[in-house]
Amino acid sequence: MAAEDRDRVKSGPSGASGIVRPPRSRLDQPKAPRRRLLPEYDPEAFGRFSERIARFLGTGRFIVWMTLTIILWVVWNIVAPEHLRFDEYPFIFLTLALSLQASYAAPLILLAQNRQDDRDRVTHEQDRKQNERSIADTEYLTREIASLRMGLGEVATRDWIRSELEALVKDMEERRIISSAESDEADR
Image 1 (tube, rainbow, N blue to C red):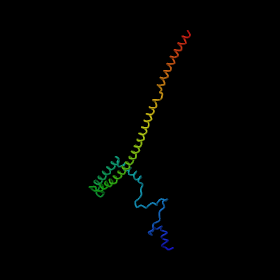
Image 2 (image 1 turned 30 degrees about the vertical axis):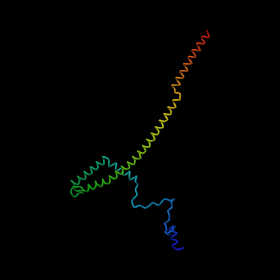
Image 3 (image 1 turned 180 degrees about the vertical axis):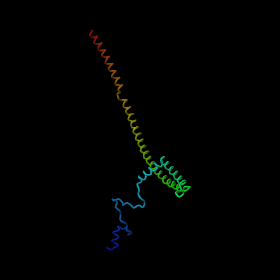
Image 4 (image 1 turned 30 degrees about the horizontal axis):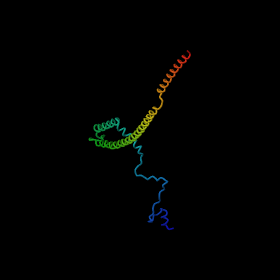
């Protein structure tokens, strides 16, 4: 076999045009993971982290700490000796720090809101399905009660049986009175 033929056999089958195709991957085995340039992260863990930050940014504690930090920053850079000041008036570094904090806080808050919207959507869907089941159950029970009421029209009720028994007792007492009166007359 020539070296050219061996290379063709090793690299896989060729088509009618003689173009050598790469070997096919097996479908019964998972593909090897591709190498990624970006670092991998767990979106759920990142989402939980962003929710914790958003919760903290929405508290009074954050506002108090941020206010104290800014006041200390401004007072230090006005009152401290000139060689210890690190951000002279108009406080460019403070502005940069606050802008940086805001540029990270806004997307984290939006991410937390999106996650909350997703949870609300799922909860709303579950509530809607539960309401549908409750309505269906209520309609079923209403139909059952209506059929029971219709069936009760044909069934002897306790009051009807009581009135029938009272009528029978009256009738029996009348017959007893009549028969005792007849037996008294016959005895005379």
